[in-house]
Image 1 (cartoon, helix red, strand yellow):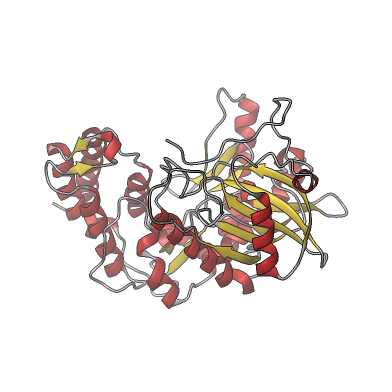
Image 2 (cartoon, one colour; image 1 turned 120 degrees about the horizontal axis):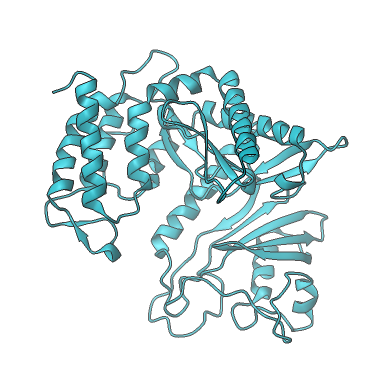
Length: 422
């Protein structure tokens, strides 16, 4: 079974270094010839951007996509992102085409939406399309690229993953910029038609197939979402729970937890505030960090973020669920359950001095965030219980359902007692 291409090797057996692809293609020696046709990619980009590709300085691979640097005859530098998995390849077992197509459409809509919001610094999308699955059996390697999603962007000045090259003061300057971008995104109000169209499909698994209330920035709506979310995750006793591969069914502890969680909903979601609303809908990036930015160095060596990209995991939540997490070098800077600065994704066996440095970064970033947006701090602290439950459901990976939901149900019972419930 397969869901993505393997990185090619050169005739001498060494892995391809990602350089001189244009010259290799022109000489009929593309390292990708046995997998897919680079000429087809060039032709599609040229036809849709009305410009001729003149060079491909580099190509690299991520977990899911190839990344290309492209130069064109009209002097523009572009970046193309092509999926490493083709939904028409034999034995393809990646995300189904309908899931991929929905993600591609949503991500394209996000780039278009943020085009006029310079403070968020989203990349400028020039062309995109969703993958298409051909009818019939998938027996041979596809001759076209229609089964791979494709995005083409204007290249932003700068580089990716420059954290280790920055000195201590410039790291803090970069965190200031990231905090300001995060605040701009938090304060951005996405259009009502956008939230109504995409909110449900962007909820993490496991999600209800539909809602019986229209999308609204209210406590009542999010009580409704949470109720349906819990019921979609824990159905009836004996029903499947989690992922099919886990082969687990709803047991007595999970079933009891379901009832506890449903009863706890009115206690866990705080009453709304007049303005700004705790339940105002916000657009979340979903993978915010320097790995998804381009950063240039200014004349004095100071960093400047020029773009934020990879919105494929973005979603729509209420303000009190907004997640300020930022991936900064070796760690993630986050807030703890009380809204204070914290650090996760620590390296193994960090030195005490490193832990102190990480804590300094977290304090600097979160303080900057709260100073620029006091309403962000208010929302995070007010949503303490809702956030705990929501993120626990999001981060559950489907296994040990009885143990996981038994503990979550006990937590809900305890919080109801503490909050004056029965």
